[in-house]
Length: 100
Image (cartoon, rainbow, N blue to C red):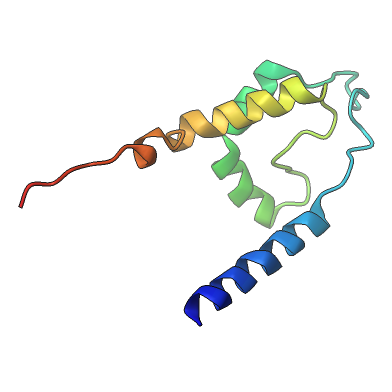
C-alpha cells in the first residue's frame, strides 16, 4: 500500500511540474540593454542560483533564469553551474562500504 501511495505522489508531482513547462517566447531576443545571455552568463547564473532564488522570493525585479538567452548553450551553462555548486550528484552515486 505504501508503494502505491508513493507512486501516486510521484505521478502527481510530475503532472504538476509538467504544467509549469512551456516554450520561452523570448529566446534569442535581446533584453533592454541589447544583450542575449550565452553559455558563460548561464554558468554564472547557475553558480549564484541559490542566492538569486532567495532574493527573488522578496523582490519582483530579480529572476533566477534569464529569459533573453541564446537557447541550449545558456541552459547547459546554467545546469553545469548548478552541478558545480551542488556537487553534481557524483558522490551520491558512489557506493560506500562500511566495515562493522
